[in-house]
Amino acid sequence: MKSLLIVVLVVAVEVRSAIIREGVEIPTYSVPCKRTDPNINDCILKGLRAFIAAVAKDGVKEIGVPPLDPFYMPELLTIYKNRDMQASVLLKNIFTHGAMNAEIKAIRSDFSNPQKIIIEADTHSPEMFSEGTYKMEGKVGNFVLNGRGVYNVTMYNIDDTVHVELKVVEIDGEEFLKVTKVMVDPEIGDMKMYASNLVNGNPELSKIANQFANQFWKLFYKEMMPIAQENVDKISKSLINKALLTIPYNQLLPPN
Image (cartoon, helix red, strand yellow):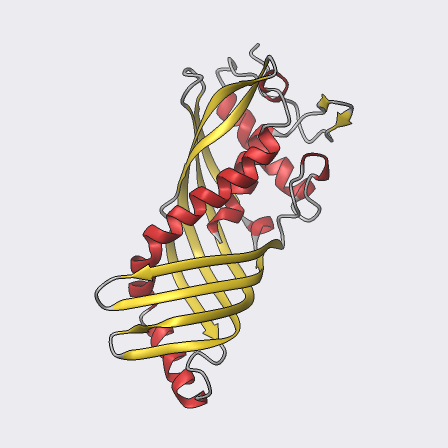
């Protein structure tokens, strides 16, 4: 679910002003920020808030940014293995809600090196909710999980520092921004999970499995975080670069 907030953050930083590229006009959200502005972080923060309020529900169709609240993903496959836990989980028709309530608390940026531009954002989300269908095969210790059905996950009080690295690339004689790395390490106050039919055909064991997952969610969260971070990096780069590589850098963030 963190990939949703990152898409909001980076696209909002870059897409705020009316820009014409190959005859396509991007709506205006706020005054564009200049790279040399000594108060650029305050400018970006203001632009973020305006952007989220304006486009979270409808996206920015001109550059292929989908609606962000709810945010839709057709599917996500996760495979995890260690000594005590093995699982293959395929999620489909994923809808994530909560982007509109995300709070951007602070921004830090460094545009001095065009090959390693850094944007960091301290964020807080009171609640994010994800739902869809799933298919899972795996086990925790000797407890076998083999089911498919519907699922939902709710995270509460999510605090994070989102670290994004970009570089300037040249395409057909024009400069564009490209995301090279996205890093997150969110702290979560609480999490509630539910999955129907976790133990295929056994409602009682499925109920026990759900209770176990909710009781020990911190353990599962810690174990799955490295894989989640890899997924966030991969998904976020794909979505963000789809937008950024359509708009020249000098139009996104004028040098002066």
